[in-house]
Image (cartoon, rainbow, N blue to C red; front, side, top):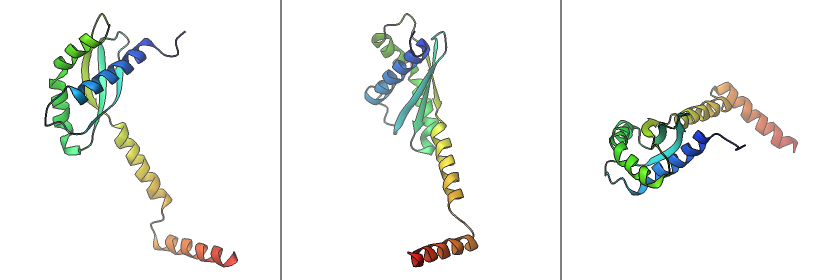
Length: 134
């Protein structure tokens, strides 16, 4: 038995190929810094959802529009590279996991740092008291 399903293996392969196509074959000057973060395949392998992360927030909508308009071009290249009976339709989506992780990180940092003057004074006294005893 294989360690994971065929749809996952095909998804990984499609993600790698699409990332390479975006990096080396798409020549649109409006595209900024894009990272292909993942791919999900439907169980019947007819649809590939490609998740991308875009560095600049103000370019996200334009980038998704450009990528979605280049789907036909990407499928034609995938057709040549992949040995599959059916080449999946491609759907680009914005990956929200990086933003979510960043938000969690900011919240954890906010919790770990005291914000009230009393808490700051208490920490300062603890540091001074710890230094004198050593």
